[in-house]
Length: 115
Length: 115
Image (cartoon, rainbow over all chains, first blue to last red; front, side, top):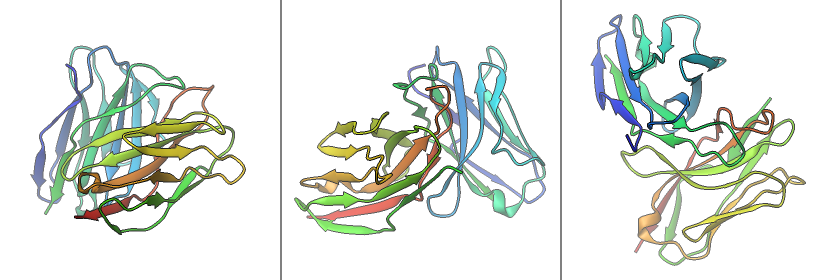
């Protein structure tokens, strides 16, 4: 597609439940990035992929969070046993390659509310 | 480490006023610098970027100059419009073999423009 598509737009989970978020990058883009927007505005980098391979996972919490990008499927971000502090908007971005003039295109985000 | 500091908002201006949003950064090497804009309920859109010292990024009347000596990338616009009301994020991409990697964001500055 011509835009990064994230689903669902909104997700409500009770504490302890699993949450799974999806991201379809722009067709032809090799890199996918996940960011978490917490509190009012703060963005935190979580993880990036080059095709189906993890590129950089230095921002991923070691527990409960996992992510995948499999061939011919949307990428996914999964949170096991959600906690209240996981409430945030999760943004996905994709870019065609890494280079000085490369732009990352962002999706509309998934708002996760843990109650 | 790498970090971005931007002025706290909100910034409230009258239409046609001059806008400056300050942004300074800490980084090793030669990062690329970006300004992103987030309109209510939407994802991030790239506003402008600069990839090396003294470069000036510009778009839609907004400008920012990459100042290595002051480690700054201040956003300016000569005459703001109501439609510019949004949250503005300064960001950097750390040097990575000259290419793009993850983005490190500032906390965001909310701009409200009144008629």
